[in-house]
Length: 225
Image 1: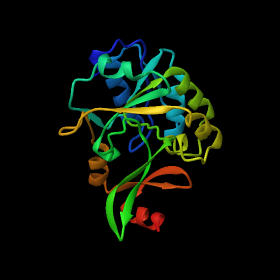
Image 2: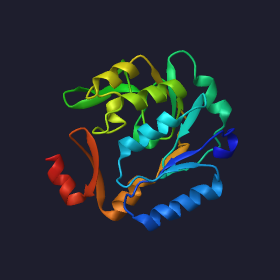
Image 3: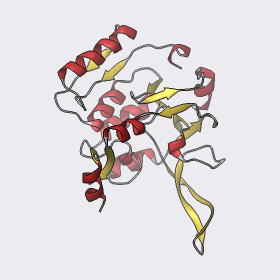
């Protein structure tokens, strides 16, 4: 995907997460090997939200690719697959993954719930007036991203607060826009490899108090209870 786009600038946030100074230095060396002019932030303390807010606040080009380190691409993705969808209220174009569990033909990501009758599921009810946005691999429009950056609350998960109304100002802002989903199935265009790594390490991601935590499975069970 990356070679198929005209890249103006690269920004990278490298947190001390499951590693220390040596691991940060190794990742920084790897980033600079591909992008010698990259601007890199290496904070003393890890914060997912502060990382996203800084990155989105740096965007100067009309559109930017938001990418984290635990994804693989399985398809060629180019400008023609992405940029034409930025029209009307679309401010994000995100790539379909198995984890999104998006089975609807409706092309915009929004809130939904399962339809059930006597315990039997028979489809889904969509809520187009409640758009969902993501920190999964996606393309974001500059002014949308920069405004979200300014409105983000560092004490809340960056993705959830885009739409869950814990951050009223941010959710109110994003509710006027749409996130267009692109990509195919069998295979999906991209794959999340972070979940397999968490399983290998015996950790789970849980949301508590509106913030993400990566903790051991035993502690995760107690937190969810």
